[in-house]
Length: 275
Ligand SMILES: Nc1nc2c(ncn2[C@@H]2O[C@H](COP(=O)(O)OP(=O)(O)OP(=O)(O)O)[C@@H](O)[C@H]2O)c(=O)[nH]1
Ligand SMILES: [Zn+2]
Ligand SMILES: [Zn+2]
Ligand SMILES: [Zn+2]
Image (tube, rainbow, N blue to C red; front, side, top):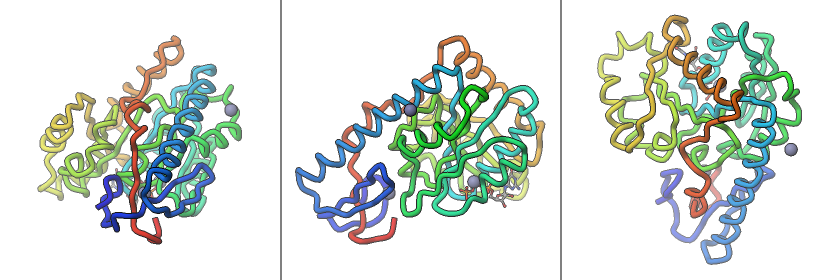
């Protein structure tokens, strides 16, 4: 059983994400664990370098994560409508394929860099570094990094962000924090998304969702939002502006999941399975 992706594995294989986005399968032995640990170590170094770039420019960088289709891009579109007049926003979009999300953001008049990861199920610090150099950092106040839709792997790769924000759509069930503890334990904010659907999804309990986050010893705020109702975004916008003020004051926050906790990250997987 894979300790990260949750899928069944043969016990003797491990897949290695390298920073070019290539996934290879190797036997689990001392050497491959060493290679994997080394790659994650290198990722953390690049992430720290990214954070230096961002801090130098007083930019707030938010890593947005969720399952596929939970509403990350829709929330960004609504956030740009709510905040775009007051602050300069830019977006890095991560998807396996297509430029669709970056196109949606650009239609709002906001710069967006699309990263297509191909086989890789998460963004890493090298990909984000390349994207940072494609942006004008002097012209950005808030940078959103929309990670690949996946509740597992993105939790293990530091990108240089200041905060982790995880969406949990009310269509997904309120037990997701219990099932995907690494991601929800490392979240600085949890957004219960698509809240306009709560009336018809009577089995989703926001209180239970909050309880599952607390069970992970995470005191993070949990807000209920709908991309379709601007009034629901007020606490989210205030949360962003608080952290932006901290970045500008030289007190940039650090994300909850610290790189040190990831150095033993092993990522066993199906032999030869597509990721
Ligand atoms: N009712 C409702 N639907 C929403 C809301 N937000 C997003 N959706 C719908 O959910 C679907 C997926 O939304 P996206 O914003 O593309 O989701 P995503 O998380 O960016 O998806 P990936 O990038 O593919 O992981 C679309 O059909 C949206 O219209 C919301 O607040 N309410
Ligand atoms: Zn998206
Ligand atoms: Zn650089
Ligand atoms: Zn994986």
